[in-house]
Image (cartoon, rainbow, N blue to C red; front, side):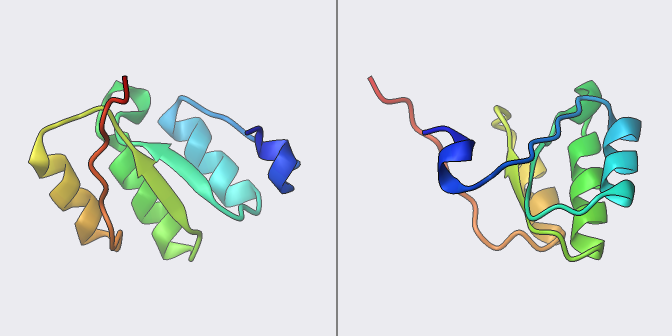
Length: 88
């Protein structure tokens, strides 16, 4: 399913922490998808904290398996975590 099919008409992307922060501060977001490893570091946690402070809902994504990363996410207000599974 394409995002446009469910009414999402504006998609903004960023892979650099500083650029992401600027986009959050400059624009209005209905929701954000945040990779924990933004900028090849744990900067996604910092971005999620900024989103949370502005009342912007976010979904954290990651391919990491170290549980310590999930504790950081839960500490900024993410209520649910989901364990992904590969589907053959």
